[in-house]
Image (cartoon, rainbow, N blue to C red; front, top):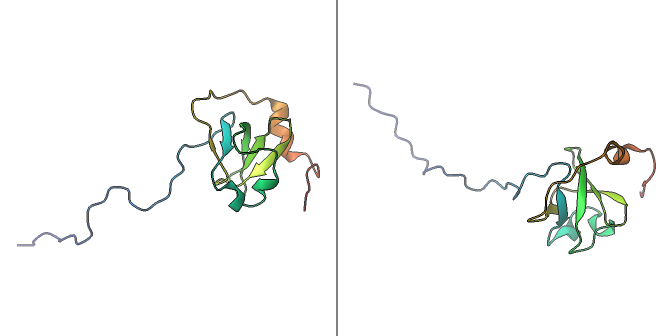
Length: 110
């Protein structure tokens, strides 16, 4: 008679993995997180706390989110620097907007 394998690890249920509050997709309206200034050069971007921008692209790299600010300037933010603005609809992203991040040397700040 075999006998069952006793599992010593306590019950599952999610636990310590950090997941973003909401998955961001292009067209989402986003705002800065409370601690945005800790992430990259987010403080130098066009968004100010309380303002809402439009997510144009998600490049899925270390600074994935290309966000269009209220005055028409696009800026790349790290994923922890922006979050979905609650209660706002998803917008259309035009072909021109989608290409904004790939223009060579436009915002080469460094």
